Length: 275
Length: 343
Image 1: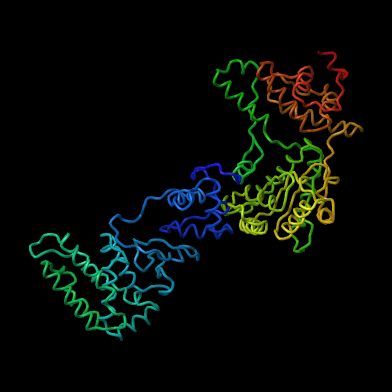
Image 2 (image 1 turned 90 degrees about the vertical axis):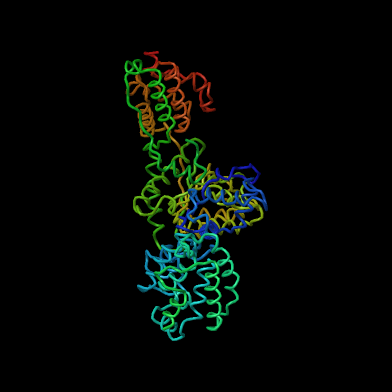
């Protein structure tokens, strides 16, 4: 390794002296941040060094950057764990118990809010250990929603959580916050009924009146949901939630969709939550 | 094996144990198939080139000094002496001995900490000091050995912090700096390098082994900074073998006998080189490095030719042809008594 450009292929680079293990679901960017910190260097130093070695083309070579890091970390190329039809995946903090206290992040497309391995909230700001309802909600979430390619950040899930927050009784919500030891609204609302409500929106439990699969006919609904989610205020306006829910039901009726009989109608679900 | 200049090659060096080939008779060798003979010869070549450290008086003494240094390094005293400076002429086995000490240290430390993986624990590191070194060049040498990225715009201080961080993280407790005579403390730039080395050694909780040519008279320990470095180190001078006294002759003869027994040649008898000990001393000037080089080449020649043994004539021929001969060696050495009878 000299300073003169020798045009080293990225895969021929030697690993860094302090080599870290990449956590499951950790993004490459998160791994790179941890690795440079462990080696007492910065991302800029590595980038400049790679350019000087001829292993990276400046400002162009994003694939080359990651290829170089697979070599610098002595990592094996991973198959993508996320489904190809996942529409929205934000990078979130990984469970700190899974990462042994280290901060790492990644696209947790397969997860909700709960680490089933350690039975705790993935984001420590959501709280510590979880209760039975949260575990059930997580399992239901992964089975009913993740299996169909929907994530926590998907419009359907966000809409459901937002709508539920608006529709529920404030006292119920406060009890949830207190009993579950969580600080976040999403954590308080993460109960099986909400997950089920979200599942109702995503279509597998929905069929048309004639029994045919909903398929593409649901697409306008989800687009409508995405359009209106940000329009819902978060400071508690039940009348708006009710109005929006009515619109949604009308929309489903227009495309001749009826909800699955397991959970009842949308109104039934939300009414149960608000008792 | 080449000098390990990277972390990966150093780790290979530490884990590598030379394998002595089977001792086959001449008849057995003759009966080998071509492919089997080639494989067997390859093993013999590897054995001849292996970095083996022999139990010489210098090695015994270095081991004792290292034990003292290791014990001192465990004290809490911030100013405890944790440096051993080993000096000697070229080919006297300094680098080999230093690398052996570091290899031994690393193996022992890894055995003591079996749960730590090979990549999160690096007990020892071997670095070659660049010629006419500056503080930045010295740290770049460390970075290159560790495989640590660095840029032209970084200062010596930046690089020092990086290297210290990594060595501390990897729990390195022994640093070997070879060719340390390349630091010229009596010149401006060299003095800065010596000073940065002194500070580096003070900040890292590790022992340092410094190896170089003729250190007591070299520029590394000259000047005020060099004197400080010298004052904090234990010193040992490898003077090589001699024949001035009966004990010294016995040591040399024992070395030759050991090397003879290690030769993987079918027809080489035990003690076959004893009559040539005088000649060997004259042509190698008591240098173990030159002696091993000469015997290695003679053995390779004996394998290729099929003779499977070496004698004084072979050694004479190769000594003058390959430049092993000491510049002080007489051109026509008188034959030793036993050699004259059997030549």
